[in-house]
Image 1 (spheres, rainbow, N blue to C red):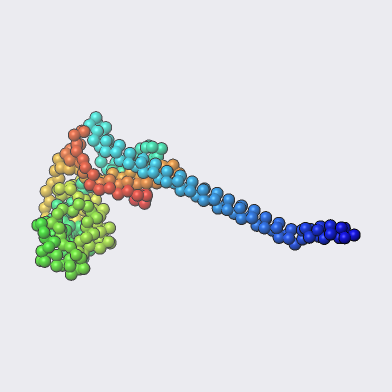
Image 2 (cartoon, rainbow, N blue to C red):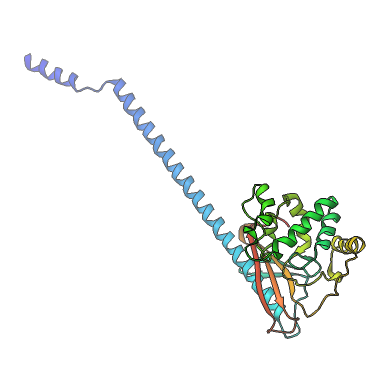
Length: 289
């Protein structure tokens, strides 16, 4: 009898309780849910990384295509075999799996800020809507910026107006190296800069070519002649050619990239001996311009 009771107690001691079984099952289920959630997060992150890598690859391919199109455009502008591309034209190229639309913008009809007299600059600002006094001051500021002698920015008589305007510099006595430098002028505002930029250029080294000038520049030339009796020398066709090459690429995955290169070509369009140099470069995503 005692032996039977001992065996019964042992059986009861090791019998699982129904509540413990349910709790264990719940832990197992929650563990499976947690593992599934972790797997989903890892999978989602992997897909996102793959998408980002694919987008970067497509963007790089579009960028390479735009650069290749710029180089091909330069080659065709220098071509001495009678197939020279006309300045001011549009061309569609296929480069590195992308379609690239190339535009060549002629700057010969624009106003060279390093060469133009203040009267022409004043007239252009007036045509763009500035009052005469402000336009006159800004035209003179442009002349002062590049015509003052070395060390002029240390001359109190020159830099005092800049200091009074809260600027720690004055005219450097050097030619403008980029149109962006105009933003540093005393009295220049972002609105004025954006309005004038399409009609300004660098290193043309002569007056605007009227045959290529936009209406605003033609109107400024006429106004300067009326107000200041300004007479411009006729354009020298042997002078440098200044232009923008704009390459808009659309590559795989609809990736878009635009490259704008500001070029100067010396001499006439006479073959491979035609020298050129890059004056500026703007790159980035296509903004639709």
